[in-house]
Each structure stands twice: as structure tokens, then as C-alpha cells.
Image 1 (cartoon, rainbow, N blue to C red):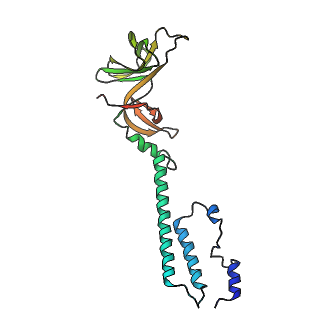
Image 2 (image 1 turned 180 degrees about the vertical axis):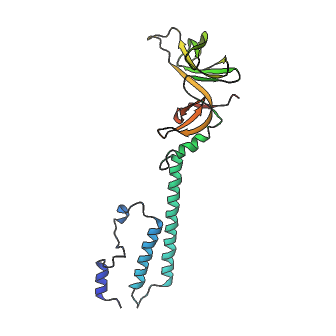
Image 3 (image 1 turned 90 degrees about the vertical axis):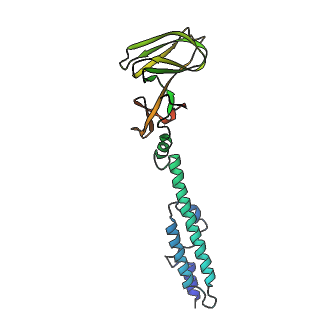
Length: 233
């Protein structure tokens, strides 16, 4: 029979292995508590309940069964929550480093992308100069080799505002280019954005752990991609 002394001891928490109910425990508990530790706590409480139940009014078997079923359900829900958190971390790149971004960047392999840049790769005797103008303007183009020497100049022509492409016959190789507007001044400014187009051939991380794409023999940051185009093979 449970004596008043036993009840007093229980109320004082003298059984150290049995956690006492704390209404603020949910706010202060560490998020690192796993489903297994939660289940162990439940089993200790269930054991104590059996040990100190009133022998004149014992807990029915159905009650224990319901408690076990509820505990198993709670454990499964916690496991599912942990899995979803890991999947979300991978997808957003959080907690798993740059893995999420790498998975995203892999989809660009084999595609032609456009990024800010002054480089141009000539393939099969032809290269394409890409640039964007803020306004209609006349401009001349200059192409340089890898050492900075002038390879070809294209006389001034009128170009429309927006994206422009100029095909150039060149030996295969990597070049750089410059677009210079004619007659631009403080009163008549023309903003030029040099653009680079190329096929993405690989994905990696640089020394700063940033995801980069390999194109035209060098790396560009993933967030520099302006658009994706049909590959000109």
C-alpha cells in the first residue's frame, strides 16, 4: 500500500531517475533531444506509474496500451520532423555547406549561359560579341588576344538599346573585347554592359567555399548568371 510518506517523497522528487513535470520545460528543453531519449523518459515514467499505482484501483491494460500507442506516434512524428529538417537544410544549402547550391548548379552543365564579362570563345572559326546598351548608340568594337594585343577592330555602327550580338570570324581560341560608344558625354551618357556567353562544362567550389561554374576556360559565380540560352553547337 502506498503510504503518506511515499506520496510525500514523490512530491519532493526524491526518485531522481523520474523527471518531474515542469510546465516551462517545453520552452527550456534543448532542441537536440532525440526521439530515443524522449522514449526512454517515457518508459521511466511508465515504470514509476506501475510501481506506485494504487493496488486497490490498478491502471487498466487498455490505458497502458493507449499510452504506448501515443508514445510511438509521437516518436515517429519527431523522426519525420528531423528528416524534413535535414532535407530542407540540403535544399537551401544551410547546414550542409554549399551542397544545395551545387545540386542546383549541376543543372547548368551543358547549357549556354550569359554572365557579365568581356571574354569570348571562338569555336569553328567564329565568335560572338555580346553587350547591352542603355540607349540607341553608335559604337566600335575591339577584340584582343590573350596577351592584350589587338586582333581585330570593327568600325562604328549603330546599335539598338538592349542586348546586341555581333558575330566575328576568328581563329579558334579565347579572346577579350571592348565596346566603346561614339560621342558619349556627360550630357549624353550611354551605359554599356559587356556580356560573356559560353557553355558550362563543370561545377566546383572555390577557395571561399562559393559555388562556381566553369565556362570558357575560367570560373564564374553562380549568382552571376543573367540568362540561359540555346547552345550554339
